[in-house]
Length: 276
Image (cartoon, rainbow, N blue to C red; front, side):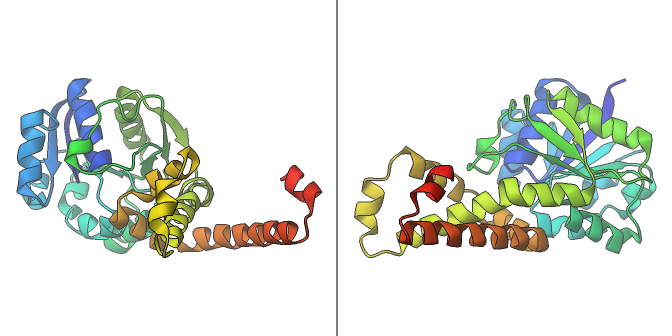
């Protein structure tokens, strides 16, 4: 049975791409969108990303009914304020999920608003993206053959888990289940740490007096760093703060390895360098 409505809150790269994929694949009867920017709503409607949208989330949530799905696709630290506006919808049995890169903070924010994690709130995270951002960057095939991690709790409603899983399978994503803690530890090392390193390397070179010559001769390897260092600063600011403990642990481990590398180079330790 086709889902009735999906409301995507936030029409950036991830939210907009999900809305676009749902529309193109005719997954649900209506794809709705929320953006603070009216021009973004207009552009999304004209391009066929959503059926209709609004800048006021209250206007949309009042229309939702049991079984409809809300996808929170805003920066991580804004999830709490969105939850505060979803009280009535959640009470009616509307299913809520999200796309944040950090799950611990999302669960904590939901618990602080609702008193506990609602059984129909299923946290999620698509492992897909780009250094590009905004409605102009949306891609209907962004999630094809990409992992989406769901982190339901033991008390999650099984039908809600299946509804969110079906939503992602419908856009050709591959599903995995993890605990919240495991997710945040794994993503801190495989995604959050590499982004912090890229930002730091690019910033280090940019502050050198001869940076114009440095960037002029930068080769492909460095371009990979600059590509991810061009990612949305608001999103990565939020991720770094929201996943602080796991990210600091990863940074500490990396610092130790970096110190060992420096010592090996200083001591001309070829064996260490070769093994590394």
